[in-house]
Length: 219
Ligand code: IMP
Ligand code: MG
Image (cartoon, rainbow, N blue to C red; front, side, top):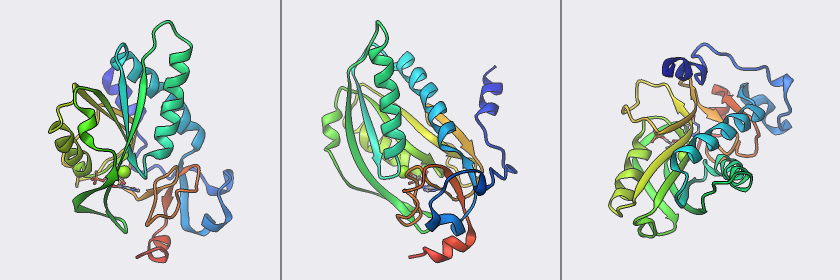
């Protein structure tokens, strides 16, 4: 059953996604994208279910949701809304507080080995708490492993990680988050707050970036 479930949330390597002309994308990005790989509605529907799974597992105790900025902000906001909806419509509910951290590891389309914490609240505020880390995408896994190491020094009571996307790549360290929205092919993805050198956060759908655009927006 688990295998079936794992397969279902995978987007296949040979998936070409949906033609751009089927969806609304900003005019200024039309030339930069190969295709829409995960439309906004599908992201939301999957997020609703992740919220249910998380509340089922972590429910009954106060959750501190830690948003990994900037790429995680859309997923974080939508996930929090779904958890709030569950909370206000059931007999069981959990207090939810939020925290933010800013990390940087990327230059152009390459993950760098150096992961920097460049802002956010003090991690020491998370001592003794049940922490849910909310991330946009796991590629090599280095960002998450670094953050987990930093966080564990502060002795939280429990740490779970939810990532909207996990890339299937030979560069993976083998790290897997507790909750995964979709497994995606080894391509550079943008939209829904995922960026390429700060561009494309203002795009609703998750799209495959074209090689031409990688040159165009290179720093
Ligand atoms: P990792 O440390 O290699 O796992 O990389 C994780 C971070 O790199 C994520 O938090 C993203 O910010 C960024 N990243 C990795 N792949 C992509 C992508 O396809 N599009 C946009 N950002 C990405
Ligand atoms: Mg990120």
